[in-house]
Image (cartoon, rainbow, N blue to C red; front, side):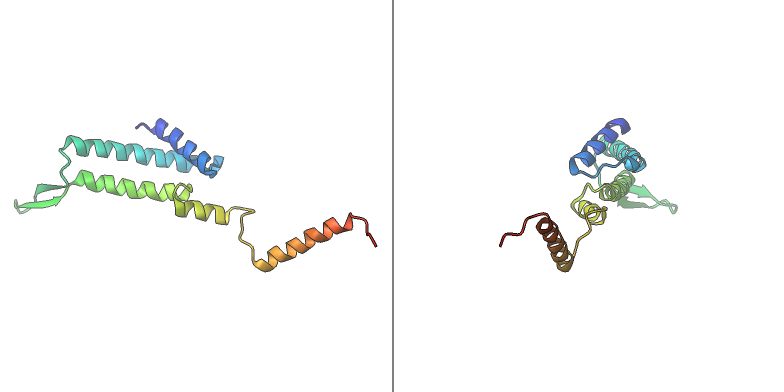
Length: 132
């Protein structure tokens, strides 16, 4: 998928999760670039026969089995992308972090909740007439 299509897809995912903010644009663009390169690596891996290990000739001219470098690059790009997905709140852990630290979403203690409830009840009682 192209970078432009990834940008659109990532923005849609952020909006659906409720985490999109305009200041995430640079992170979204970077993630889109990573995903575009990851897709290219996946395509190269398929064209190469999807071999997880290949024969490698070292400096001593000996053959050794080694991980396919294309697969290693794909894995590295995938790990980088995962970090951005998490930062944008597009994984369960990332979403929990964003909603926990967002302004207004701070977890309150039971005491704070009770005090707020008492304060709100006091406000509603002030405006009502006393009935004896």
